[in-house]
Amino acid sequence: MSALMSRNICRSLKGRLYSVQAVRKAEEGPQFLKVPSSIDMVKVATTNNMAPLSRLLFVLKAGSRYEDGSNYGVTHLMRHTAYLGTEEISAFKVFKELEKLGTRFNAVTTRDYTMYSLTCTRNNLPNAFKVVYPLMEGRDFNKWEWRDSNHNAKMQFDVTALQNQPEVLLMEGIHEAAFRHGLGNSLFASPNLIGKITQETATCFIAKTCRLDRMGVACAGIDSDVLTDLLEEAISPVSRDEEYDSEEIAYLQREVFDRVKTMHGVDQNVAVKDLLKMCGTEIDLVKKKIAKYGISEDQTIESAVVKDVLKFYDIARTVTNDEKAKYFGGERRINRADFPLTYVTFATEGPSMSSADRLSAALVQQVLNPSTSVKYVANVKGSRLSSAIKKVTDGEFMLKGLNVNYSDSGLFGFTVAADPQDIGKVSKAALDEFLSLASTSITDADVARAKYQLKSDIAMKMENVGATVMNLAEQVHVTQNVTSLNDTLMMVDAIKTDDVVKVAKKLAGGKLSMSSVGNLKNVPYLDQFTK
Image (cartoon, rainbow, N blue to C red):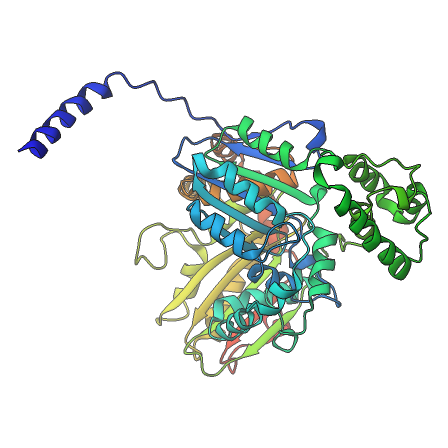
């Protein structure tokens, strides 16, 4: 009886309290933050969507494109060592603290970036941030955690599973054919390299790439002031007296003296300014880092706590592969007779993230093969590629557009899949229609329909908070500016038919790349397609 009375009273109070709730704060649009000078190397963007969950994304210019012959596959390894600790925090503590806070932590690598995502309730984000941030910048692995980690088994599983995913093999192949190296580097380690990527190799790559000047931070569901305060507290100068006691200083000095002598051939009495002269082109960055710890350039190594000095010195000594992507064009064939279907992708060089042609190219894609959000609908009406294929076959086929934008290049084209007996004529018909863009016209009606479809596609994708945060992170890295959804839709409306035609001719006239997977008996080579 008492329980029933309590429920009735609660219902009554609930109805009354709704009328006195505070007015909900209006949602803030995305913005590029002007952060304090102490952390101005980090690019920050945020949008406050008033959601109960906060999503934070650390984005580092440390994708597979920055690998070279000495460390191929290291970014694949980084995906599986994200939870490993550092000298400041153990992997066990990372796991337990994040578990206690109900936080989801994940690592993703692309060809441009390595991304660490954090999802938790708004009130727990500050504490979760403090746990995760030490894993972001120039981390050092603990030897015992590295030894006991099962990352090699996970990498082997990924590579094994990859062999049964034709779409992934196809994308790996088209990137290798188009760019050879850089953006052509695989997202996965080669099977013969698994187990051979050492701790030193990973640490060196992280030191080169995971730095403040290569970091971007994007967040949804948190006030911009809170995010700025968290970053400033994590990055701003700290007192060395508070960071180390006298015994720790003595231990660090002894450790550094040995390291200086054996690794750098520098005497412990050398002045810090002389050490800086060896830092090469990044000396200004290293000076700023050293100033963070209150170390004077006139001090000798013996009188300075130089653990961090040498850490940044090591970073400056290395060279990061920051070369602009170069498109070559070519062909990659993977013969897999055990696959029931054969897959073929054609592509030319597409616009980059910062290109003025990016949205026009997206409209061209909608003209060629419009996307659909309706399930089980094949061969969408208005698709020029689909119409061309249906003229040469009555069999089933799959068609998908390809429009991938990177920081300084891209790929534009399409993928087609069909029965091995039909794939030759199907791919030929689709490619001929694609190449015809160089000579045939695109009408105002085609562009109007493409605009409706593109705007719908963009808006639906941005309903996903994860996609919104990733989009913010990519924008701050490439343009250091943030475009809202409404502004993007207005930019689409402003595109003229002549702009679309111009971009279509440019894309259709570009050098082709081709990737094919499956039974390739009836798949012509690239030069045979273009005769």
